[in-house]
Length: 195
Image (cartoon, rainbow, N blue to C red; front, side, top):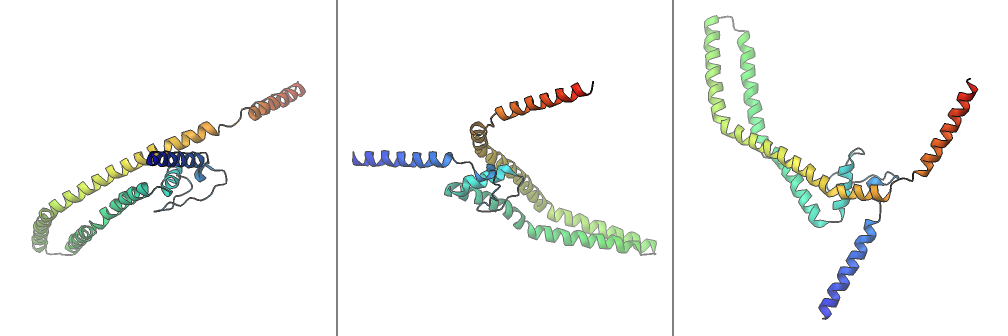
């Protein structure tokens, strides 16, 4: 029974604390324009989804861990292909240099042999790297899918925040109505003086 009472008190305490923090306007939506920095990156002033998401994960260890895992995976995708990119760039640069050098050869027979040699070597190269290029393409495609899903994930988590803000902070219509009445009055005075 004591454990049940303790558990009930803990849940109530947590609920009250959660409700108290939920009543606050997130910094990203606060008119004071406080700069928000997430645990893993800073976001520009324009991307409100990223700012709200950064605030959301700030106090959630599980979300921080998951976010870190996603970002690390996206960063690792370039690292893991770095050697292939360098290798490919050097090979392409070499073949490009050969093509450039071929233009300066005046002996047409020698030029023809060199072009044949080049085509043969390039063909071997492309066969040698075709599997690596396919894997790199798969990594790129997976990156796009991970990025798309990450954007969806952040949006799905932050929509309730913006909707709550919109619901609780809807501006009062009275000042607008009052000003419209004032404008109509001034407009009518101007029109009556223009006759």
